[in-house]
Amino acid sequence: MSYTRFLLPILAGLMITTASAQTKPVPPPPAHAKPPSPAVTDDFIHKQFGDNCSLLDGPAQFVADLDDDGVDDLVVAAKCKNPMADKDEYSFVVADPYDSFLGFGNVKVTSSFGSDAPERRGVSLLIIHGEGHDAWRAETPKAKFLLINLPFKTLTVKRLTLKKKTVLGIYMEETGEGENISSVVFWDGKKYKYQPLGSTME
Image (tube, rainbow, N blue to C red; front, top):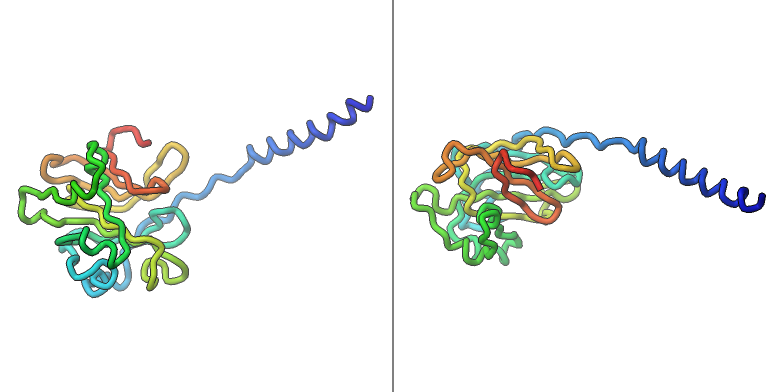
């Protein structure tokens, strides 16, 4: 009898825990991206990434919560002459998700890769992870990234469903070797990853 009385509270606790896990609310999907207001200028880019980076005419600018921390981030296209020389001075990370996907993981090497098309040389994607009330406009943002060698001609930011959750991805229509191919870049919690659309998301 005493053994039964001992087991009953344990079983009851397990049932409550299981029920709580089953009724755990599903987090809402991330909010849709929007354009920055006012639009980002070269002065802002020079302040955050140095004078070697300037805005690229054409692609839209986006504000969205890319790293899923509840704070708005910024995505803009730019042309950057020598990102490796400025990364320490302006505290940003140079990353190459495209060539990493292809098996070339050393950004010191891939940053020297040049496009055959002169108009594509230095084309980059600048991302600022926001911090606090001022978000991406904060004097010291949470993190800054300069993504190189992405073969995009158009950009849009919209929802991307991964295995366990929905995040915001940067969708690209590619140019060059990937002409007419779509792909996406997304934050996996540690870094930005490139994935051709139609392949399995990891």
